[in-house]
Image 1 (cartoon, rainbow, N blue to C red):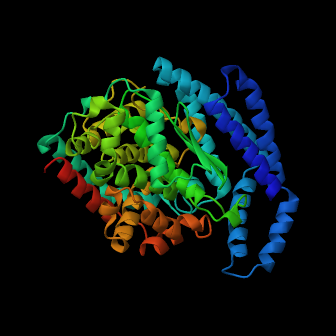
Image 2 (image 1 turned 180 degrees about the vertical axis):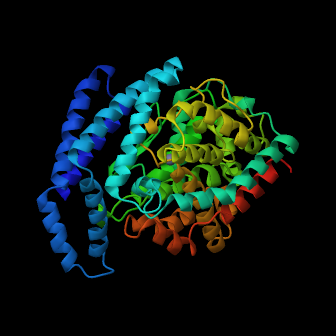
Image 3 (image 1 turned 180 degrees about the horizontal axis):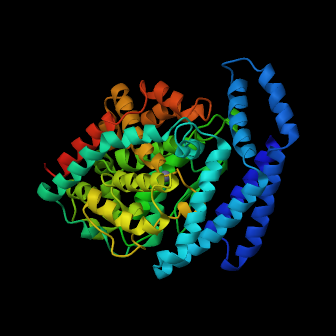
Length: 485
Ligand code: ZN
């Protein structure tokens, strides 16, 4: 088990290096090295010996123990890795790298037609993949389960069914009657070194352990790691001052979750986040609920002013409104907290239709435009700003998008429970005392790693299965106040 872990770790380090440090010329050699390493790891993990050990362990472990949890997660990973024939895995990997190249080109030249045949193949592979895993309700279930164990397409439909109308209405209300604040003052040329130092200061303040992790820069921010003692975050600098700050807080949320697994589980499959949705709940909680709150900036705005005197004109109430502006936009990764889930809803509806064969790939650009008009009241003029913007489908990540919305909803449900038990969070945040908040999350979520299934963890941590009530109540209250509605 530790051998397989070491091979995965080596691959992760090479991948981190590729995105942060590697010179351009290293790409071909890196691709070859990574390919060989992941094949070695896959072969080792899916070997007859693993199957035999797993069989033996299954008969020996006592229910309800750490060993039983370990056997359960290894069994899940093993089944997922062995259900796909190796010829299929190779074909998918080959087609994905080809599709990625084609997607990059199509996006550059804004020509969906050149990407369409490859995308058609990606969806055809996704159908096959779902069939290899097996499913009963909808093919989509098999793919979604890889990212969010126990979730089905019907669960996602119900989730969106609850939030669709209230969110569309809130966005409309903000647009028609809201008192907006000019946020243009956040744009400018900001010293990168100062931005980095300030971001490091913030993530350290909220509790990211910089003896067991670090922050670097990369074109696309991410969090990775290969041990609870070594978690890597990245951020990027843009002309908007919030980009690096909130990006860093977001990745630190992922990072603190990873750092929170027990040291005794390090380098075993029990360590780390339990699902993408639960992971995203932590990045969103620290980025949005804590990081975009009024008390947070009561504490940190004076320091921000000292570092960036151009912002000194904005008092804390104005700054709070500036960083919480809602604006229907075409690009998901730049979307605000309120419109974000509508971007996800659009993708979910489209990939369901494509997977079921109810819609043809050739009709995707038109369908995309229609849905943006329907849900956000805007229409992209190019496919680059439309159906060609996301990397996910080109990499075979079909069934992935709903985990973002699961994370958004869950962040509010967790926060509601946390504030029930720690009622003075605003006071704590305003003086920069984050330890009680982090301690609560550590106790209820982080220290459990993959011990429970995602649904068990949510029930145990918040006292109920995930629903949209806390999210709708929280987001509505916040934005009614920001926009004086
Ligand atoms: Zn994230």
